[in-house]
Length: 447
Ligand code: BGC
Image (cartoon, rainbow, N blue to C red; front, side, top):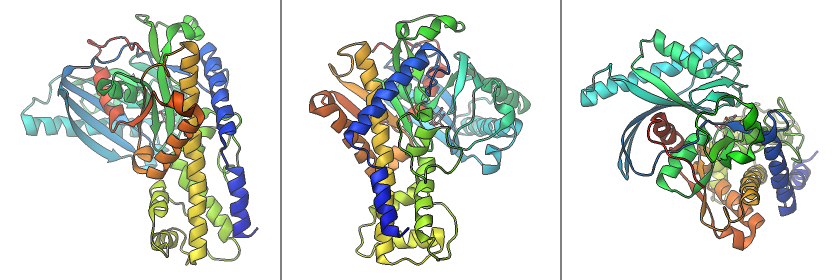
């Protein structure tokens, strides 16, 4: 097939008119309800977070977090002084070989970052190395929790594959690694999904936050749910002090119903994390690359490499007449010389895939908002409601952000949209986890 007809087909297949987005949002609601009813009922896991209380607005103190995302491993030291937040971050990229290695090597690497913090605090402030510290552990994968600081890894996502960790308590794995490295000055008091950390961290700054979304390497969302709307709660382990509301981690990356897939989505391991693969940073560049490679198949020599999401953004930002940046990115990645026409087509491909991803993410957000509103009329649209977003994709990709916001606005209409604020909270996931590590002073997450 010729490049232009591939593009035309693609644009048709990837179109996301508001009707389609509404039906995605409605299916999302149905799957949310099913997951709250029984574990594993449908696409959404709707995991209990055991976070039934959130850090109060004004606090002072020193908090720590260990944050494992899809790309980086971060140690955070969060110092709160009323409204001021001072964050020290030690960030390291997780080496590729550890993502598919052994549990021991992986958790050993994660734990080792804590020594850097201990040494830094000692050198900077003379804080004795053996000072006791509580940490929140942000673990950005699906975990079935049995208490605030215990949880079994259900499966890996984002192309991680460390088989001997599946089914294990990830806090126990971390503690074992910490013991081996004589890091017993730390105790892990909270195990937190990054969405839940974002909700807590953002809520610290803005009391109207009700939903939190991660749009980075992977994607996910959590929200404040009424405990009486969670039938499966009754059949599950000790919930501790039962409060009126709790935070539910939807694991929406697993959603798939009604999503229109193209042949280019059908590459790897389909059937798992379909929604995530259509909307998050790990995959957008891969999908675009597959399409461009197909277009180039007409005889050119090409190297089957993949564009990164950062490069997609750079391509979309290129406003030069001859699309110079687009050309050099394509040359660097695929080792091909391109004509201006080819470069223009490439930008259209990027736009098509990014727009689809962002609009679908918007539909997911609307699904959650609608579910909350259906359960408690006036809760969302009757007052200011903030959706907190953290993650590199949303933060660093202006066009994605624009498309997502447009879709939410189109779906809700001006009246409902008036009270909905979609706001980015940088570093919220780590800050929230650090705050949640201090379990002594948290208060119930009233909506
Ligand atoms: C994981 C979620 C996580 C999300 C964002 C997904 O792959 O399953 O637990 O919240 O990525 O990091």
